[in-house]
Length: 266
Image (cartoon, rainbow, N blue to C red; front, side, top):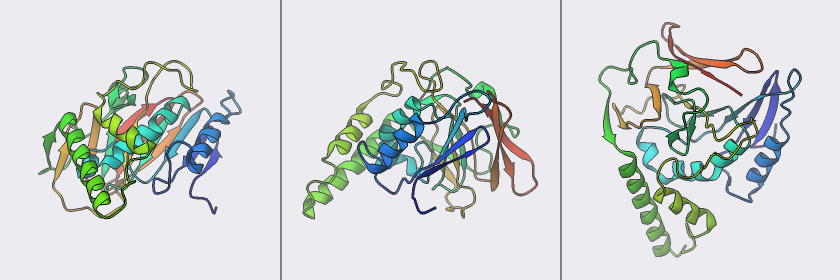
């Protein structure tokens, strides 16, 4: 494959690979391709691909220092609505070298209460912070957004001083600023998705545990949408059981034990 973004079918699963390092904003080549690809997904029972899995490098949701950067909010603002309208079932993310999972119905920073949420999951080890010695700094969502706003302002100021006054002043930059000013859950008002029904959200999983640990011994935020997180090495095993049910489990590389498991729908 020569493309930075592409899709393949595997049984009842339609897999989409995106590039978070290329332009994904409204009207871009990648964005237009994504919208076209999602619109063409065949969800016919028995022959189609009712489950849609998206994977990309950078995360839309995580609870480390990276989550305080405006990039994550920009990804949410530009792509989350496309995922919702296109009926995406599960989003796999990386960049951060650990494992983190949200509730099963996350949408615009809010667990919607529709579909399979935290109740449709099991964490075998008990608790959300698995590794001994790790703790959360506990920065709240409001403060996290303010830090992201401050970073964005600093970047704009530096751009102006270096003679690049247009940086951050385009339409995408204005949408990002609006997103940072908006309360969680305020963006979507129950609009339907391709998978049927109203706004339902989906689980977002950081599966970057193949990378070397950063050495940091703390989590930064402790949001209500977090279901489980761990620094332990492992891999994610995703299984589509039938046209309406799928599950995934995070398996420890050390001893093969199941550290986390959850279910999700199409």
